[in-house]
Length: 216
Image (tube, rainbow, N blue to C red; front, side):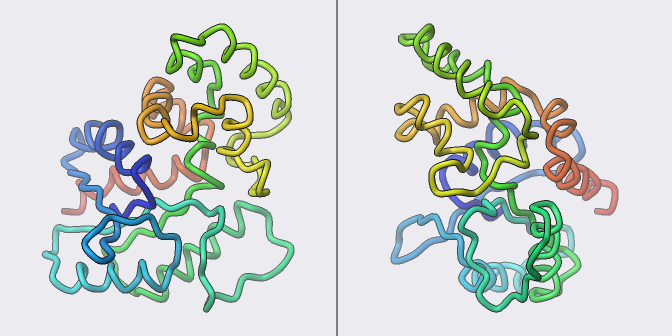
């Protein structure tokens, strides 16, 4: 699983891996290495380059997927029509990723619109990760919850100040530096069964990963 950053990598290790293991699927998260250091990257040309290296030397039982945010995802060669809904847009980009790499064991996935959209499935879990400021965080999260009450988690936009992570950071500034740890904790407490129900695109990806065990 090629991950955008440490948050996604921890989520894969702590949440996805134990779940998929029951399906005989063993998730191994990796990040891009640049000059000897792990680095988050959201550029399809660079991701494709790294994927091609591993796909070329992989065995038949090894599959490859991605977990990158749609927010600020860079895919310069793709022709994305105007007027698409967010769901249509992410499906079109994933379709072109699949066509560009063209390998039956590649399962492209982009998170609508950020990893933090998963936290919006149950914002009430956020204060539990900040026990020293539980009541203050709970109040801030209550206001945040009211502001997005008409939106589904995967519909929260990708604006520079209104993307999912930006909204959480505005309510809980500490989240910015702690998100690689508390983000996966929050999502883990919510539970994959709830996440797949409230986030259909995420749910479709999870189902694809579960089925790998059946075909291997």
